[in-house]
Structure formats: C-alpha cells, structure tokens
Image 1 (cartoon, rainbow, N blue to C red):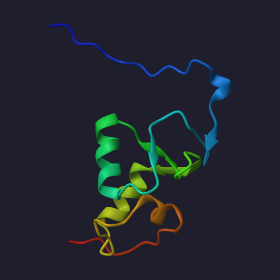
Image 2 (image 1 turned 90 degrees about the vertical axis):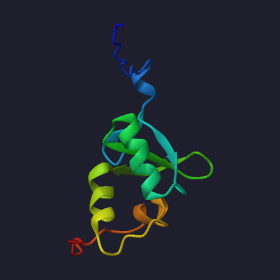
Image 3 (image 1 turned 120 degrees about the vertical axis):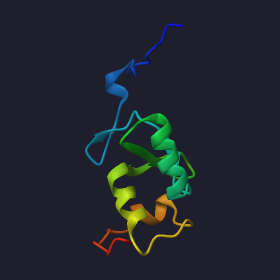
Image 4 (image 1 turned 180 degrees about the vertical axis):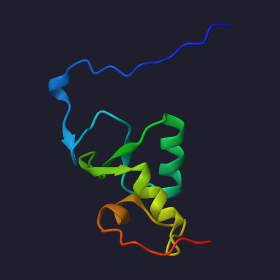
Length: 98
C-alpha cells in the first residue's frame, strides 16, 4: 500500500484574505462551535488555527490552538464555551488546574 500526502494549494493567491495577521484559507468554522469541537477539528485537520465565521459566513477573526489550549486548561473553563465567547474577550492568565 502506498501512502499519499495531500497538499493544500491556493489556486488564486489574490483571493485569500488576512484575518488577524494570518491567511484565511484554512478551515472555516461557525462562531457557535464549542471549544471542545474546535479542538477536535484542529486535531483532525492538523492545523494551528481556524478562521471563525458568523451566521452569514463572514469572517469574524481567527483562533489559535495555543489560545484554546490555555483556555481549556484554566479553572474557568466549561464545555459550553463557544468560539464567539472567546473571540469577544481577552484571555487573562488564570491558574491552571493541577
């Protein structure tokens, strides 16, 4: 059995937009997605960030794996937190559960 590798290619580089300093041709997800699901999508897609869109499929920002990992490790984390909640707030350092 031969292994294959897929490569993401941008057909028209001029059509990509920049969201928070990153090219927005990666996975696009809705802002009502939970942090848990977003982390699973990132793991499955093997990406470090997601482009977050509102209900009208307009980009509202991007979220990084590192930012979600910090949030998930915090004592204030619940499995009901949505990406729109994370984008609308500044994460302050919080004690990590031990």
